[in-house]
Length: 281
Ligand SMILES: [Zn+2]
Image (cartoon, rainbow, N blue to C red; front, side, top):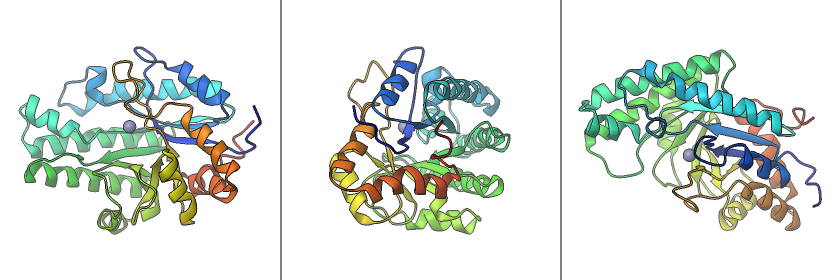
């Protein structure tokens, strides 16, 4: 296979070495030309955390840091952990744990505080927050927005990017303004599972050909991702670990070399302050 001669970053995926493919997925990504990964912690409930005490979430972060270290050993570049609370957690806390929306909010803010500790110690690269992509009560919606705003305050305080899980949208300018109001520059807010175009935050584009081509043609900063969930019970629920390197090869064949540099060198530098070229061995 031809060398890609560029860093290749998948900006959002999950790995489950216990139940899923774990390091085999990393090896497959690297074999196809992948070099760098942003590994997002699995939803806490998938790891059996059912507590309302933020301290109980620490093992989720420890596990993700271990996975990222193992992945780094196998990649030509490296992997970084992105840590936080999945926005769907609020529904579990309210519906299954009898929390009020306010109590759920406070728990999730506490989880983010712990995630921020990992970032400030250099053990993780960024935070993960957001709000439900499905219909919720107004109280839950408001509480979710408050959680997200807290993530922005933390991101500003410790100077890191915040990845978001939100409803599908082509315009999240309002959210970007919330971040900017708290001192976090809007380009450090990253919408995971984005389409090819997005106003406001930096889009992390799901690597479907159409969306990637739209982003490539836009001339705007973007990242590429698969949202691989590494869940054997849901094969095909998302894109596989080979997808980003494959799409980069396709972009190269189409002559989009500027877009490849944008998504894999320039935007990672702009959003996370990482140098994907120099971290290649
Ligand atoms: Zn995800």
